[in-house]
Length: 420
Ligand code: GLV
Ligand code: MN
Ligand code: MN
Image 1 (cartoon, helix red, strand yellow):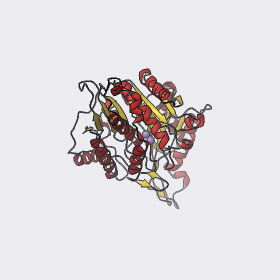
Image 2 (image 1 turned 90 degrees about the vertical axis):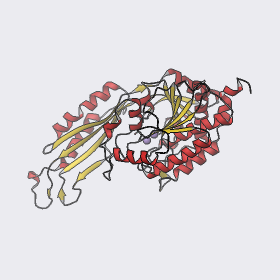
Image 3 (image 1 turned 90 degrees about the horizontal axis):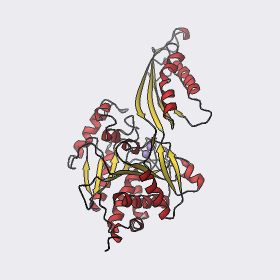
Image 4 (image 1 turned 135 degrees about the vertical axis):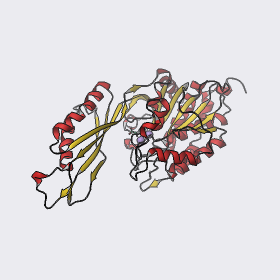
């Protein structure tokens, strides 16, 4: 084999198997399957462990070296001709939303695995090692916030910041992580953190733009910023039949006042700002007791850091001004500023799509991703494939086998270019 053959990106792309990748995704979709073709695979659950074991078996078949870190981030390493060089890192997450789809996250892990398998099959060598990563708890569905694995790995926040966070059954993140690591004790451990040569994450778009434009590939330019808050309103529970309304400290009524005021604060005539209240916990949560406590979450997103900061910083005062009877505790749990991806990776993706004869569009991501926490450490970028009807965080989420394979061909080409 000549030098040019063993580093020819087009041979890497040609070796990507649409059928193998789809079959693996469908095998993984059975782990946590819910009605309507959806998936509920909470992070660090036994289903997550089963899914990881499948991926580990496939990685070992591909000759990859498997390791795990203190955040249970899982790494699958394909060696480079110079093992002393920093790896090119590629991956995503394996946990799902509680009522999620078959592709959000897991596609990026399986695409990375498919890419290194294709490189093997094509006899491609790279100077830099390539590592596929499955980050722990990107979704934040079981333990909020999301992106704990990548935030801890990148030094954005210490792993212990979330030790006390509990799921709905009262199990803490620290306990679930310890249990998971004990179950995975046979895997070699690696230190938390690293400085990759580059990072590239493949993901479904989760929005409607690529499909509407009839494009095959999204060349992702950056990610809008996000802030997560919780608002807890503390009143007093009382008998629904006997407590005069004027004497109540009703947490649900104050929650309605707070939400109305927040909707006014967050109103954006351009419809760029994203303001979501989607989880509400009321205590004691019974029809004939006045609510003594109400807690709701806020997910706020905007591509402009100044607006994100100004609106987020105004939440506490807006809630305090709106409520009448309760005490309010407002906490921020997640802050991710808007980021731009690195031109080297963005252009590698654009060039790879063009070389594959695919139509591409540059676009920012509305969803957050583990990639944004790698940005301070290494040139970073993402590849999107179209999502049917733009649907995601929903069992109906769908991208076709061909669309997913096209994304993986672009990934394989880009990885060869970056790891050369
Ligand atoms: C990721 O799942 C997000 O909520 O953007
Ligand atoms: Mn995702
Ligand atoms: Mn998601």
